[in-house]
Amino acid sequence: MYIIKVKGKAKIPDYIQLRDQEFVLIAYFRADRPLKDLHRYGLEGKETELASVISGLEFGRLQKLEI
Image (tube, rainbow, N blue to C red; front, side, top):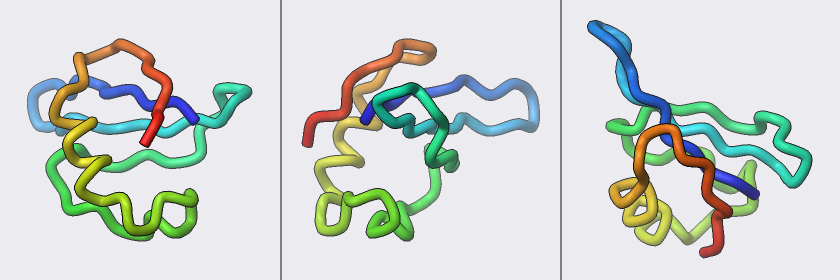
C-alpha cells in the first residue's frame, strides 16, 4: 500500500490518498480529520502509527506505507 499527501488550495483542505500495489486509489480522506473506518483498509488498531506517518509526510511525495 502507498500513501501520498495532496496539498489543498484556498478553501480546499489537504488530503491523504491511500493506493494499492497497482496505484489504484482505495481511500481518500482529509488530513486534518480523525481517522475513521480504517478496518476497511486493513489498518485497524494502527491509528497512532498512521497519524505519525501522515504528520511526517511531504506534500506530493508518494511513499510506501509500512506500519
